[in-house]
Amino acid sequence: MGKATVIPFGPQHPVLPEPLHLDIVVEDETVLEAIPQIGFVHRGLEKLVETRDYNQFIYVAERICGICAFGHSMGYAETVEQLMGVEIPERAEYLRVVWHELSRIHSHVLWLGLAADAFGFESLFMHCWRLRERVLDIFEKTTGGRVIFSVVKVGGVQRDIDSDMFAYIKQVLAGITDEYKQIVATLLTDTSVKNRLVGVGYISHDDAVAQSLVGPFGRASGVNYDVRMLGNGAYGKLSDFQPVLDNDGDCYARVKVRCQEVLQSIDIINEMIDTIPAGDIAVKVKGNPTAGAEACNVLEQPRGECYYYARGNGTKYLERMRMRTPTSQNLAGMTLALKGCDLADVNNIVLTIDPCISCTER
Image (cartoon, rainbow, N blue to C red; front, top):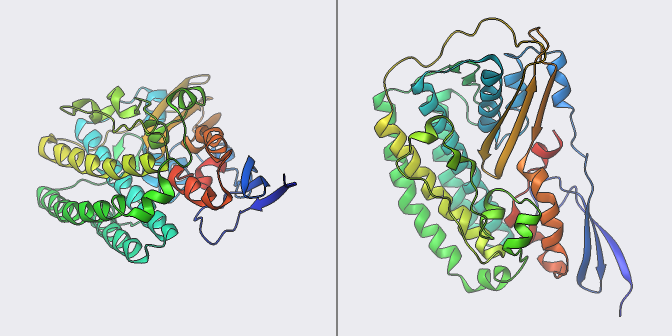
């Protein structure tokens, strides 16, 4: 038997794209325990609700994370709208869903490229990011931004999308679909990829429920939960929504779930475009949140359920704004998946879980 050794893993790492810091306890080549160290990129953004009014804070919220930017601005706006009893126009709800699902595609394709790079698939990495650029082109044409969009506001959205632009979006997504399916087929059938992922980082369904795992991490272990099932906003208008599930619970299952979710998001966008109603895109919001009033909201971010909480104090500044991000939920499951694995598999396990440290530490 070897002697247990602690290896500091991150926050700077040549393979991982996130500033994740783990203290990994190893014996020989086996991981005995992984201990997360939190706080490296903490910025204290929630504290800014005391100095930025509820309209200004939406621009802070979407800077919590570049990849999840639109989801944070949407989740925050929906929370404040509940807090103030504001009902936004139906067309604005549809537009929010279109942009949010484009953000999910952007996030998942970005992740897939980084995962392929970690496996040594440099060409697949470049192909994934080439497709991602087409999604960012859509964002730029419809919002003016490629990463930070500033298109959501309390009461609706800042910009509309006309029929010609909707036709362009459907055309681009149709082109992405064919190429993306080829990329996924290449990745999932590759023998070396299967050897690195199948049976690695296993989480059972019972453990996933016990650890409250959310998003693709939980759904890859058969957890049938997706916030979009609740039908919030325009998601309630979808003809049929079923979460993408897998029961294998290993790294390969997590890759498959995310790959399939991209195609599901494309279908959702097409349905939203085909059924979007005419009308206004925003309503005027007057007054301030009532003192002591509280509201909470949940949103399915690319990595899973994100919980938002807000409390008013009678002024234009919120008393409290709180976000519980999906990675916060999934850290416990990540340490469980790492326990007992080979040291060489740590990178792949972490990458298939896809943690967002910027969101987590805020």
